Length: 309
Image (cartoon, rainbow, N blue to C red; front, side):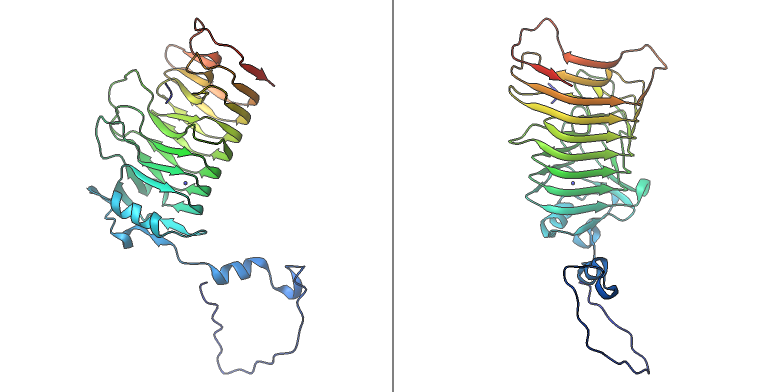
């Protein structure tokens, strides 16, 4: 099973300031040169630095509790910042949040799995509406199975300019090993954008989606079922309006792109409007499958499944 105001201060020196009466047209945000962005900046709050909540980022001590505390303190619109460092993190759950941004310093900020040969996830986001994850690196170090960053019942998620890898990969097993995985919850994921990321030795999976863009990512040696995987998981689900475009996939262990009824005995599922365009798929070793569409096991009986567009 396949199985994220600062007060406005005017520095007045020795000068005379004359205030003349004026009127604002509130229906026009550009009225009198006062813009919406200025108003937004006035009320912007400083970022929540995870180190101020006790995270060490030394690659040795477990920072899970400190990272969880930063998320707990976050309010709608907040930025949670991860300065350069290696943060050991497992099983942090973020629930019922909105409009959060996670920012790091690119390859200098690493969130690392601390349980070798396990299956524990790094982070889980549930019922989150509005999440941006940018400029972070994730290390599923020595993951045995699954792991990764998980999502359930999410909407309006952007994952951009990140790296996800396993710095000490174990021998290949029979299960998938995740980077990001959008799993089946109580409702579909909506408006998901995964762009400009690099994923090594791990699988990207987006199930139960409606309006998903997976674009301009690079995936190397992905384990195991599909480098980019779309799976049904349950009876009666709908996967629709996906764009899988301009990705580069190199030496996948399974299919490069899998659009699967999986488990193969799922019934009454609909897979609609899936666009797979402009991808580059390269095999430098024995080829597997470039694109697999259909049941994972064609000898299994199922009924009522529909492919459209």
